Length: 576
Image: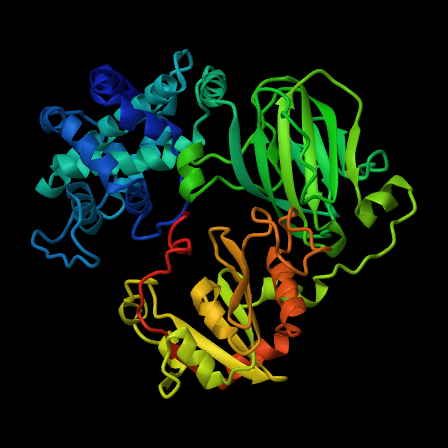
C-alpha cells in the first residue's frame, strides 16, 4: 500500500470538488506568488497568514457543506503520525481575533504535529493529477482553472489525512480547508502554468494597454546609463552619435550624468507623434527609433507601482507597448552636468527614421559627440540655489524688509513681538496641537532675523508675506519684497516700496516684474532661486544659507493671528 493506492481514491473525488471553487479566488490562487512576509508558526500557517483572511473565508463558505460530508480513504502507511496523548488542551491567541480556518489549523498543529506538512508532501506527490495542460480562455479563466484544480487536490488530500487522525479537531471542515489552502499556497508557485497562460497574459496586457498613458518611474543607473529593454542589460553602448540615447537589441539605453544610483523619469506613451517639440526646461532633447522584438520593455530596476500608480497600473511596473514593431522615443533631460538628472520620455509607434537632435546644450552631450564643450556659464541665480536642498524647499515665503525693526515686522505680520515661541518645542507637540489652525491646517509661524539693516522674515509653509496688503504695509519705510512657493506649484513675487505696491504675481503669467531681465521664468527649473534673486536685486539683500541656519539656531518664532485668508491668495491646501 502507498501513494499508488492513494491516487485512484483522490482522482475519483477530484472532479466533484473542482467546480465548487469560485472563479475569483481560484484565479488568485492560480496566480499566487508568495512575498515571504509571514513567518509565523509552521509552513502552512505562514502561507495561510500571507494569503489573507478574505480568501480563506470565501473558500470555506463555498466548500463547507460539501467537505462536511466528504470522506476519502487513505492507506495507513501514508499517515505515519504519532497519535495525541492528550485529549484536553487550551489555546491563547495573541494578536487579535483569528479566522475559523486559522484557529482550526492552529489547533491541529498543536494536537497533531506534522499533519499539515504531510498534506503538503502528498499534494506535491500527486501534482500531476491536478494538471490542466489544455486550459484555454482569458488570463483569468486559465488562472482559475489552474488554481481550482490544485486547490481541489489539496482539499481532497487534506480531508483524507486529517480525518484519518481520529480526533474531532482534525476532522473539522475549517481545519481541512485551512490546511488545504496553506498547502496550495506553498505548492502552486512551484508548478508551471498551463501552456496557454503566457498567451492569455499577453492578450490581457494588450487589451488593458490604453493610449495615451502617463507614468512616473525610477531607473537604476549602472556605469552612467539606464535602459528600457525586454530583458537584456546592455554594456559598452556607443553614445557618440547623439550624446544621449542609443538603440540596443531589444530596446534603448540612455546615457546619464549620474554614475551609479537612481534617476527619476516621467514617461508618456502616445498613439501618435507629439504635437510639438518642448525644449523649455531641458538641456538636451533627442529622438531615435528602435525595433521591439516582442514589446513590453521595462525600465532598468523599476519596481511594481504603488499608491496612485499602483491603482492606475494594476500593481504592475511600467512597460512599453506590448507589441513588436518599430517605435520612436524622444528623450528630454536636464541636470546631467551636475549629476542631478531628470528625464522626460515620450514613446510612440512609428516607422524607423534617422536620429534627430532637437536641442544640445549640456557639456556632457558635447563631449560624447566629440564636439567642443560650450563655455561654463554661472547662472545669475546660482547664489540662491541652495534653497532647493534646504528645509524650506517644499513650501515657504521669504520676505526681505528695509527700514523696520524686527518688532515692527512681527506686528505687521500679525504676530505678538512680546510672545516668542520655540520652533523646536512646537514641532515636538502632538499633531492635534500642531495641525489645529483652521486657516492654515497648522500653526502659522514667522521667524525673523535682523542683519545688515534689513529684517529677513521666513515662513516655513506659510504665505502671509506674499499678501499684497501685508507687504505694502511692510514697505512703509523703504522697500519690501517676498517670494512664495508651495508644493502645488503656486509661485508669487511681491514687491512694494514706500507704501506702494510695485508688482505682485508670477512672472511666467503676469509681466512687469522688476529686476528679472536675465532670469528665465519660462524655464521652470530653479524657480525658487530665481525668485529669491529678484527679491535680492529689488531690496539690495537676499538670504543666505548662513542666515537660515542662524534663524534655526535662535529657535524663536512668532505665532501669527488667525485672520481670514487674503482674497488675492490661492489656498495653499488646494490646487486652486
